[in-house]
Image (cartoon, rainbow, N blue to C red; front, side, top):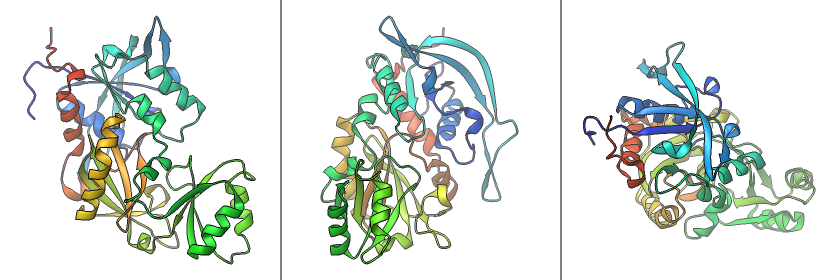
Length: 337
């Protein structure tokens, strides 16, 4: 979409400290760059700075100007410094047209409280991506369980005996902490392993915390595909392939990224998810698929745009920002004074 001259959309991004972000990797930076390139205002704040007063959510917001990354010999190259901050102002978040909640997981108690504060943004005035209620409803492991035709055989339990029976029946399985991120804490459990009791005890904190245990998918060695969905529709994908002795393909643990396509089976999975994602206000989502099976639904700060853009010569960030600018809550009819 080519925006009409004079139309301004104000975007606020709730992010981790900007100086900690990697401009060549972080999707948040790609989205902010896209908004700036399309002529919009870009403001930033942090979840720990949110407050509510007089029934409205407030935050100290700083306008940011970004020097966009450039593709140099197949890699993103960033200027130093790559961002410049303007003056800070305490503003109601509904003075923004769209707010992206992009704080990285895990979803801790402070993270949860931040979503309650974001409930005090008037949804008729400002679009929040993703909605606070949607983030609360969608544990990134558990959310996938409702799509029974899409997921591998899975149990969730803190009971060591239940977990052992599942592993013994399958021969090999994958254990995942429900609150983990970036592959942290994921284990392969094999029937007959003398360490299995200890591994389960450690992962469940002695039976106090449930974990997810899934059928091991041998196709994992060929890659863990990340598909980006916008309002339920797939807009791009990247394959993350384990390297060395690592069985996890996550980029955070050294997974290699490669070009990929979205298969018919994967399009079908996206179609299964779309109505539920739309119902729950989960507009910008990253799903993980291994061997034709859905393994995770990422709703907090899904990443992958930089890698997809680099490998496929696209600009998904602009696609996302243009979609947001077209929504009613974004007040795109507001013109510059």
